[in-house]
Every structure is written in structure tokens, then in C-alpha cells.
Image (cartoon, rainbow, N blue to C red; front, side, top):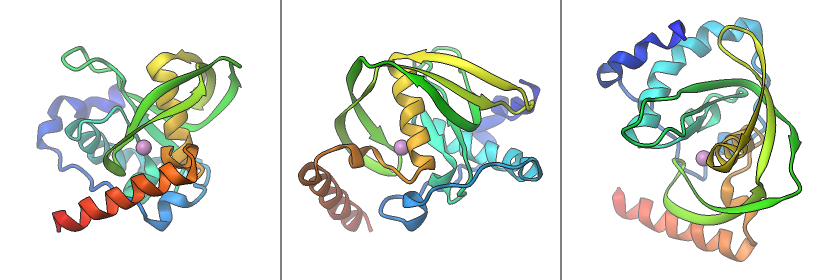
Amino acid sequence: MSSLDFLDRLDDIKPTSILVAPQPVLSQVARAVKPEDMTALREALPGMFSAMYKAPGIGLAAPQVGISQRFVLVDVADEGAARNPMVLINPEIIESTETLAAREEGCLSLPNQYAEVIRPESIRVRYRNLAGETIEQDASGLLATCIQHEIDHLDGILFVDHLSSLKRNMVMRRLAKEQKRKR
Ligand code: NI
């Protein structure tokens, strides 16, 4: 975990700005991370972790900070508990249960908007970590939801895209109205 040493001094790290929908990069399919991307990826991590923890959020995908590459950050540790940061590079869901679970989701790119989304309850995900190792991991509950939500971002999908178009439009209109008021 030595490459995440910056987490000890996160308060001094400027959070990267998170894009708010609608933004073209949030609807694009991100490209795979290549070995030659790793230096820039490592450089992007401190600002991204800072932004995620400050929000606070439990996940952040690269497209949300304008990087159209396939990597995501996840930390579903309870508030106040020890941090459990994960960086998933080129993640893929290789198995998912037929059992579905409904869970209320939000998104840092859709601030203050929440809706129940139905997804497989448990998954198996394959990804590369920062050390370049291929990891296969089972996840269920909140972690499974979070990983699926973040991988969706890499395919240009927001949680509202899982809702009926009626509900989706309602959320997007409410968001636009709130963002306008903030300016
Ligand atoms: Ni999101």
C-alpha cells in the first residue's frame, strides 16, 4: 500500500474538481488503462482521493474528474472506522448473482440526488491493483453496489440510467434547477 502514502496528509492535498452531469465525458465509454498511463494515473490519485473523502463519497471513477480511462477508487469503510482505500484498474465484473438487491444510490456527479437502484446482490470482480497484480475479489452488499456503480461510470452510465425515463428526467431536471440556483 506504499503508493498510497499520501493518504496520511490528505488534508493538505487539493481536491480535484468533480464534474457534475450532464457532461459529455460522463456519457463516454472510457478506454483501458495501459502501462504507459500508470505514471499519470498515480499523479491523479491524491487529488481524486482528497475529493472523494472530502465530499464525502464512497467511490469515484476517473471520468468524473475528466479522465476517460478505466480506473476507479472505492472506500466503503464506515465513517470513523479505519480507511479501506481500493484502486481498481481495468475492472471487470466476471460473475454476478441472479439475486437482485435494491439500494439507494447517490453520485458525486449528481449532487443531492438519490434513488433506489436494483442490481445483482453479489459480484466477482477482476482488476489490476497499483502493484500491477491481477486480483479477483468477491463483493456483496454495499461494496458490490459501489463497485457496480463505479464500473458503470467507465461505460458512460449513471445510476439514473437504471431508472425509468420518467424518474430519470425528474432527477435530471431537479439537479439542473439546483445547480442553476447555486451559481
Ligand atoms: Ni457515481
